[in-house]
Length: 457
Image (cartoon, rainbow, N blue to C red; front, top):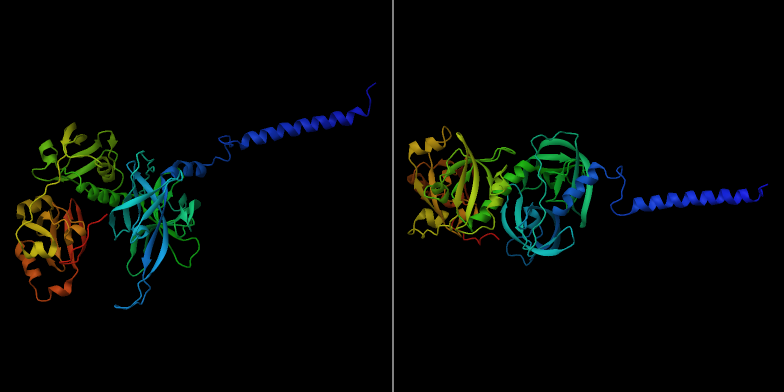
């Protein structure tokens, strides 16, 4: 007959055995890569997908206190700035907010792996508060997965990633609260058509990605509402990437010349980007590229945005041949485009337009203007050359642009420009507002006249 005293000991051993098994299972689940499916939520996967392409930015800038008068001994104080950036090209090109890097003496970038390096400001657009910086590394960097902002829905889940208050790679979750918000954050900065979200966006988040549930970037975090809880804003990704494409085109303009002018992005275009015009006697013209062509790919890079085209042209050299997959009305073709060195036109003789504006203009026939820009303006002047350090270059004006207005006057002829420059009150217009046509876009800016400014980057 069994010893009754043995039963409790057997029962205890079974409990210990079960406990050890449970503990082993718990330890197994806690091992790296062994998280349960319940823990690996869509948000976790979205963050894991985007995190390698998000960088943290730090730098020191000098801030002058408001109300300091001219001639004051106050020289300003140095403050440590912080923000976030997003890798948009594997060669080290990163997009961020311009206010994050504006005035920073040395831009310090920390990658997701912890590696630190110094970045160079390549180009910026003050109106949209976007800038492109570059780091030089031997390794190719992971690029953010791009979504679209054309189908966003109020109420859908979003995730913000950034350097909030200096805490690197902080993740916050929320929803899209509203679309198409206009926000005035200061006397100098106004944003229109922003995404509003209740995902916590704090100082340091600026320039970081707003992600959808699939881990795709659908916006760039840009602003917080002072004194408000749960109200932050982001630039829609379609708009931001259109600007980024233009900024990369500026980076390329110092390296090679192709002569392709692309139409403005209206969103993601799976069939390709539209060629608005081709510069006469350019490599694109010699290759047979035509206005109305759709460029579907550059080498192996699919071109669904203008950004993709300009990314594919980065780091290339004059004389290099690039294969373009083109969709034409009568079917697909392949175009071999040989890139050329940037034309170095000699500076024209001294002239008020060149001396004051830093560009040379050429009259365009009424017939040619109507063919290219039907029903929009009465006429314009083609920009044929731009002084490298002049006001026009500093405002992003490029050869091939068409000047259609200055201040309140149209510029149909050279005489119109001469009239504006010779007005007795001309000095009071400084900086003078200008309007140009580029592809199917009308762009404007302000020319600080006869002021020599150091080149970007």
